[in-house]
Image (tube, rainbow, N blue to C red; front, side):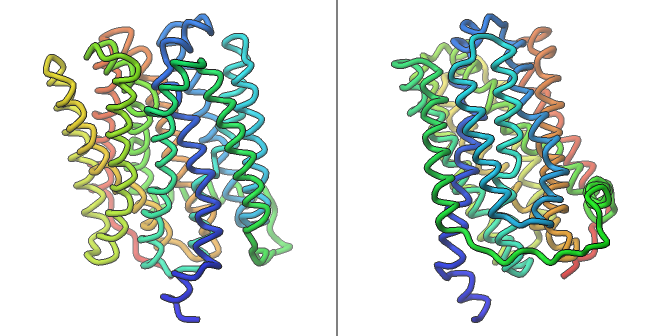
Length: 401
């Protein structure tokens, strides 16, 4: 079978799309608080800053899970890891749906974070082991695009569900989605077990994952990704809803509509980035330009605080298109390491994605207490600029494989 035929075959496409449902679910549950922040804080008895801390538990757990995740993917393969992750997410969403207070909600966030920690890496690793680094660039964008549809679920649809049935119903709906997706993974995903090296230990594999994150091959990518996903989570996952409702004066449903339209760019953008990468190349330049433009658009939104909300919609849509180059960082990392280290290299990048999101979200709470929602959002945009400049300052690694 030729590479092009393999890339388009049902044997590749169907499992990838089924595995990508996990990323859909992950995006839905981690961005749900943005549209339900006020009622969540009220029912749990916490402030907006306290809610940022609670939802930050998701991100810290997600980041913590990357090291064992990378080891597990390289040792046992995608199918058993994916099934385990779905079970954790379903347990976490069920706990969130019945959480009576902040501590139980924090437990739910941590459980969901661990479960969601590999929902993007599972399809990414599955594709990376079959496709060449060049073709993987296209698929990394497509998988991110499919997964980002989960943010659509947490915009207008979940805004309506929260408004009519409460925020707990949103988590129950996520539990049902997860159970269906888990059954589809069990039925459709088949793979050859990865080769085992009996001389390798789990501790050695874990150390390699951590070492890769600071290695010359991945150092620049890690610097960029530390703020890359953080800015998406900071705006789309937490502060975007409060910004539109409290600063711009929109209702929950109106804010949901704005976030719904803005999220479309996070679906269109990654697919476009993958296509551009395949036909134009210059992956490093595209990553840098996209992130700098994204930061500039967020600063522009903050400067337009007194202008109509239509400006925010346009700027958020453009921001989504610009920042959607971020999946190319996975392709850059994949091309910099041998195939046997694929799972650990992708996990190292994902560790930076979500470790940065956790750290910056934690920092955004005090910023909000000091200077309001705009100050919290500015933390993320400023970090993107710094991360991009560090990325450009570091030498480009030599392609491998």
